[in-house]
Length: 449
Image (cartoon, rainbow, N blue to C red; front, side):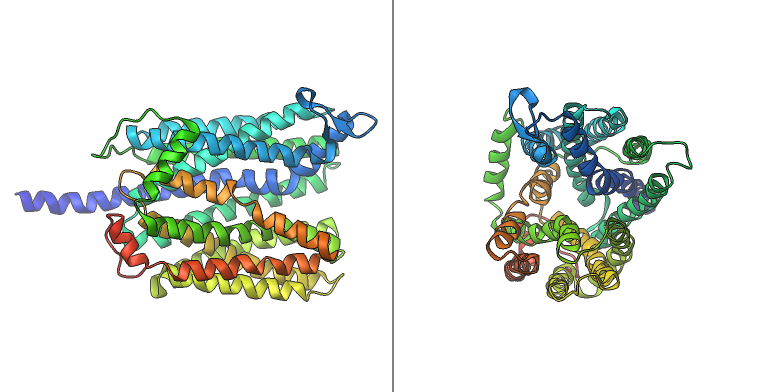
């Protein structure tokens, strides 16, 4: 009788995990639209224009009495949102692990971010301060939500499935981003046909991302389950103290920390390429805004195929080897970008295709590999450190890019300088004995890793 019960429970448990995985994918589908349409395309130029309308004769705005150049307001606001996220994420991660109640925290983060994004519809005239507050709240909420979302991965996917599950999640996100971006660009380009002004069309595009985020978050909230881990610890640390406690705990797992260091470096290169590619295209190659937007769409679409293809490669060669291969591909892509001729959109599209094919896979497999290195019961806490590496620590790449351009006056030299992040990241990742690292973290070692 006991044997029959066990046989019945095993398929039921597998079916439950499949259902949770399908729901989990939809959080990437829900929130990636914010990154693509709001942060990457529309908000930066629009918020800067709003700040410029509010500026004094010298071009300054004065939030809380502090003089800030209108053209710098967006960048400073993004930086402030990162600082807020760095303070909040370790606290929320630790609370999620202690209580086992991630889902209410995920809901709070998602709907805070979605509400702030939807509220951007009211960003008109000279309301730059409203835009800054909404951006800080939305960006920080997205970081917290992604940290909690990522921490579900080791709970909903057995070790041998995590590469594929993580890759599908990234693919869902890029598919949603490209779908909504196409719709937004149609609305923006033909706003007169819809009886809208240009600024109203932008505000509708911004708000639509928040509505999309909130609507599709319902799917993971209905399907994911909270789990109470046996190893519950009381803690009273908050904010930066909790971050320090997390780092101290990670020192007990030096191989996990070694992987995180490698990821921090090569991901810094990835994030810098993403953020500076449009600058390189417009300033060095002389390409127009429409060309750059098409390139962004191409990256989004091909990132779906790239994430799924690299997930399949990981099943054959293991996640670590596949990530190492992607870092080689990043290096080759940057080298090719250095030689791109100016005023040649076709070649820039080829470069965008190369970025898209390795972008999703390198990010997806890094996430799944890290999930193997997290001690059981500390998923959210460790993923808060991972998320800060992903979002809060990527400052050295833009600094190197800017300094190189300042010293050489060439964006070609600036873009090729980023190769150093992929070379160093490759060397550090190759030195991590991931099988031993997984065992020392207290997790089962997959056959292929």
